[in-house]
Each structure stands twice: as C-alpha cells, then as structure tokens.
Image (cartoon, rainbow over all chains, first blue to last red; front, side, top):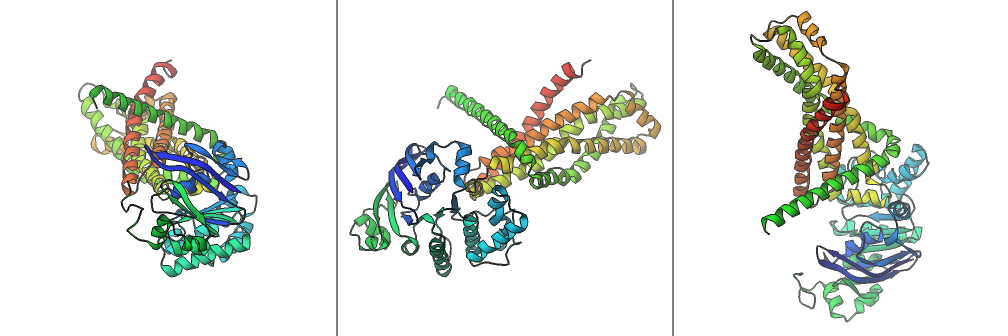
Length: 250
Length: 261
C-alpha cells in the first residue's frame, strides 16, 4: 500500500534521509524508531506531502505522491489522518470544531449531522461532553485524544502518528497506545507511527523499522527486534549510552 | 564576505522576498471566490480588523484633527483668513492624514496580531495540521484576512476622516474662536468627491499591505517564541514602510493623472 523508494532529503547541506526504503502493507502498522533528530518526522511528513524529497519515490496505492500537483495533493490527503506530536489542535476553535473541521470543509453534511459524527468520534477516543471547550482547557492526554478523533473524523484508510506518546505520563501513554491499537483493529486502518518510545513501539507496531544514519537499518516484528543481536538496534532499544551510535550527533 | 557580495546578497534576498509576497498575494486572490463563501471566517476577520480597531482609530483621529487645526491656525497667522481653516483641515484629513494615520495605527495593531497568530500556528504545526486535513491554508487563513483588510480599511478610514474633521472643529470652536458656520463653509469650499475617493483608494491598498505583511511574515515564522517575535516585528515594520512608500506612489499617480483634470 505504501512504498518508499530510495528517499533522499537534505536541509542546508546536511543529508537527513540518505536513501530510505520502506514498505507498509494494507492494514498493518509500521513503527519507525530512531533517535531524536534522525529524520523520523521528516519521513512522515514526506508521506503526506508536507515536504518534497530531493529524490526518490513514495508510492501510495501505486500513485507517486512526490509528483502530485498542489490541487491533486489536497484531494489525496483526504485519505490520510495525522496525529501530531503536540496534537496541533487549532486553538481558536472549540473541540467540536477541531474534530469536525474536515467534515465541515469537505462534506455536505448539516451541522447537526456533523455534531453527531463528532460525538461518535470523541466517544471512540473515550471523551465526551468536551464539545464547546477550547484546546487550552484540556490536559496533554485529552489534547492527544482530541487530535486522534480529528485524525479519524473522515474515516481515512491511512493514519500517521508523530510521536503519539511523547510528553504524556506513563499511564496516559498506555491509554493512547491502547486506543491506537483498538482503532487499528476496529477500523482496519493502515498506520505509520514514528516514536523513540520503545514501549509504545512494541505495543502498537506489527513491524518496527529502525532509522539510523539516514537509512532503515533494521526491519522486523517486535519479537525480532527484541531478539536482534545487531549492535545498533540493541543499543537503541536498551537505551545505552555506550555502543556504535554516537551520543553527540554530528 | 566583501561589500559587493554583501550588497548583492541583500538585494537578491530582498527581491526574492518581494517575489514571494507577490506569489502569496496571487495565490490568495485566486482563492478569494472560494473564501467569500466562508462567510463566518471573513466576518470574524472583519470584526477583528475593523470593529476591533475602531476605538484606537477614533482616539487617534480626534487628536489628529485637533492638531491639524492648531498647526493650520499657527501657519495662517496674519497671512490667511481663518475661514479657510475648515478647507485646510478637510483636505489634509481626507487626502492624507485620515488614510495614512489610520493605516499606520491599524498596521501596528492588526499586522502584529495576524503575524503573531499565524506564526504561532506555524511553530505549533497547526498550519501543517490544516494541510493534512486537505485544507489550503492560503484559502482558509490568508484570503479571509486579505478580504477583511481591503474592505474594512476604507470603511474605518471614512469614520476616521469624519472624527478628525469633528476634532478639528471642536478645537477651532473652543480654542481658535472660529464659528460653526465659518468652519463648515470653509470645509465645503474646495473639498471635492475626488479628494475623498483618493483617500479611500489609498486605504484599499493599505488594507492589502497590512493583511499581506501580517500573513507573509506569520507563515514564514521559524523556531519558537523568538521566531514569532521576529515575525511580528517584521510585519509591523514592513507594513509601516510600505504604507509610506505606497502613499507617495499613489499620491503621485492619483494627483498627476487620475484626478488632475
């Protein structure tokens, strides 16, 4: 369903992605793990067309998204939902307006029908009676859940998660992981998540891919990652300062 | 870097920025037909830019009119009869002081607010979030602000002109011993509709400048709080400079060609 082929991207002369290759099959969840600043979010933003690569292809259902024109890209994005690291809720809008914005913009549903659908989505993420609150009134966990409700509002076949548990306490992080897992099973969504939280990666991922040095250096199931003898993978998943991965990045 | 290289880079960078502003303006204008249908968004911006700026504009205008009266009376002294006081105040207010001072005040208030809002949205990934929801930020954010700016600036300039003329009248009546009849007869003497129109044409362009500078610098914000601060400063400084430069260009064009006959 999603095929990333030899993706390269540089910023101000620094090559962040040096030829990334990755396959995501329909209905599966692939978690890209790696150190902060290794290019995980950059990879994710390429998948949804927020960034243009220097070279390489991204095929989604056979369509190369890197060649789409602006109007075509907007149309294509209706098939995606994305949960941002900081939730990225629109702070001038209420919770219901945040969750229902895409429905208001892209469907002919009445306000009443949209409100009903927003309530359903909020219930799916374990929230209710928040409709008229503003994002500034919500806790970090609530914001993430509203962000998740917004991501699934249009029932997209693909959801991208950028650090879904970052900044949350361990209990709330687990709640979000459970929620992501449940939504994947219920809605049969294809997902790509990026995280450095190994607990989250093991819990939500069908397959894990490690991004290091601008390339995917290891791919496997959570069990295969746990059993891996690759020194780079071992150092990262065990969170050790000593090993082949330099502590201070160049 | 030698001096020639520095000048070359600065000019090149500035030209690139001018090009980028015009590209953004072009994209925003293209989305205006769709943006007009977003009545709620446009109305919100009109309220913020127009109604929200009124108290500040009205206070500025009343004192502007008052100062214009005092300055004119001082310069008239024994050479020009005071029956021309209303004429001078009327002309200077509707052609120059009303539109320019209103634009500078609104530019400071609204330009900063637009840049800060869009800049914060940029650094907190809200602009990216809009894109992921398949919503064009230029249509959703820039076009309503542009529409509100170009419609509301002329409207509040009309209010500003009116209040400044009243301010001049109050000072003339109380401080300069000029009667109501003399002031308003003088006001009507040489005030042509083209004077008012030229002021409103200027206000229209100033509205575009304020909205575009706020949006452009807001959408280009990088980093965090510091980036938002820089964007806000740039939006206000560039708005004020462009308003004064455009004022000169429009004055030259309007009075040498359009309204010269």
